[in-house]
Length: 397
Figure 1: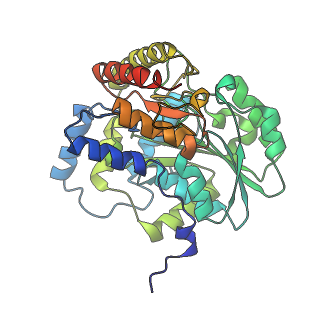
Figure 2: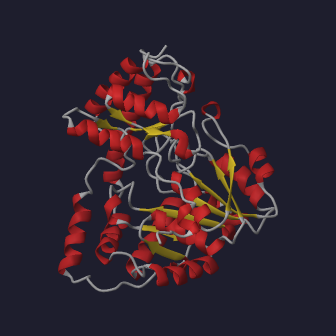
């Protein structure tokens, strides 16, 4: 009998599957399809990191690693947190996992019992709500909009808290919006969490270094809630190492121990060679990161300028990550005479079919009025694709 478990059956399929399938079909017909949907840097991993990986192979880093990670990597992470964030941790508070996604999965499995509530601001990264569902928790979603830069307010946060609230999960800089919370905004949240010591704050800071003209701030800096905060980070975005699969947490000791226990049964330690490469990445100056961010900032400005030329498209100016998240709801109900746009999913397929550009519907991010555009692409591709999108949207009446 073909029967999957209830926990798997409850998970949503990727909302991008229809667009991905359509994109493949168009490419097979020889059509020049440009993808602005990918969530990874389009730069190569810096050479010094690749050399460290090659040396790790030659040095026979080919056996099982300790479950929480090699001591050299744990120390590099502790040093990074002190240097970049002025956060004090010990190595036994660090757990290295197979990417930041795995780190968040560990945390939620270690924290959530059936019907525990997890507060998540929307738009959110698609995996957050699915991992909560997988662990039989309840997602409590706080909506935002482009008008307030997709940020929640302290009043919204306080109103969402109940006796069942176990965690608050958010990212800053944000995927999918690129929004970044300021120190003052985070302090207002910290003051609220200090009144609720049973709530664990999971702060996803994977885009930390990809910010424009501002400084990234961590909510872990506030002493009154330090023991309630888990910092999630990794090497994927800043160092263009998505395939290396190295993420980590810095957590209260009791929670780090729980994640270590859990990971010991699931995966053991992450890839040995990737860990040694990550030591090189974290211990190095950020010169290569800064060069990449300079290019991203130019592309962000290009995309915003191009979108500003399209009547009916509403954007905020993202301060981080490499996404723009325009509100396209003014087109809902409009038609080109063949297709009517009823929602963001329709818009994604329309843009792919008529502008030969892949974007991601905001539906899966909890913002059905938006689409996500990644500018991790060349300026030539960005110019071409956005000109195509402008022409396609002009046909909708």
